[in-house]
Image (cartoon, rainbow, N blue to C red):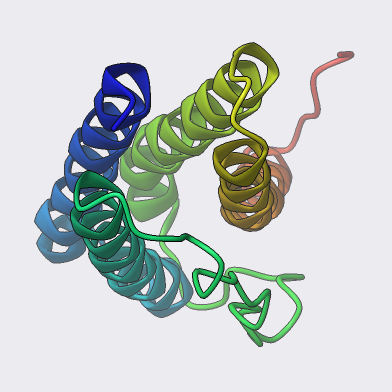
Length: 165
């Protein structure tokens, strides 16, 4: 068993645990139902990622084939289009903007980790797995970016201004 592959997978598992802990810990802080729904979804998805990586680690450490570790991209989250964070008070938006931004940065870090690690590995199976995991995280990142952008727009609208940038 290649120790670098084990190290990659162990680090990936720790990052997924960190993400899951963040999402689940913030659920009680959120007031907006759409934001709660998204964080709940992301917490569940990180649990799935942890299970997947744990199983992969077990499998790889026993030096078995990874052929049956095909990642299906059926993780699509069918949430209504985020066009209005309805029912949110301006104070709730103000409180939730930094939380959503932090979640976005966590997912962006995941994307970068998986992509950079995939570039540096010679193991084609692990490379493909890492690139597919990166795609999952890109989906999460995009959901959060859309939410963040919509929250900013609503905040600007409520405050009667829009920055130039």
